[in-house]
Length: 146
Image 1 (tube, rainbow, N blue to C red):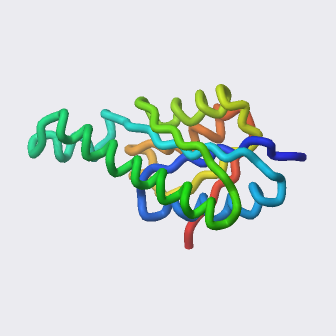
Image 2 (cartoon, rainbow, N blue to C red):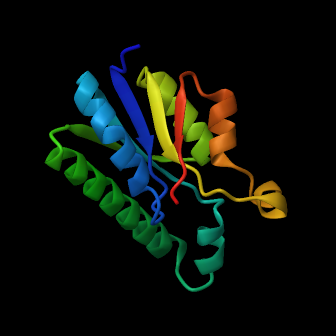
């Protein structure tokens, strides 16, 4: 199997760089086009927690700035390894954005991290990884940081 296009969704967490590190040797070996993606989700807990402290415009600007910095760092990390990448920041539910982008970009592989939530916390919060595994149009490599 050849991976012409690899999609790497990044959520801005401290763990997301593990997906970049896992995808780098694959992208280099296959000469893959890499798409780095972040989803700006206004329904996420982070938005709701800080909503009262910031105006919606300020909060949106700060979250967007943070995700753009995450995408830039990931692009730089790949470039240091000899792999070029495109970046995308889209609004919406992360799982839906990932699956839709994988279809639009004709991704052959999605490489993403899992936070390893278990029990009630997983049920309450839902799992982006599980949704992408179920709905994604291509194979998904799930990286679990140790």
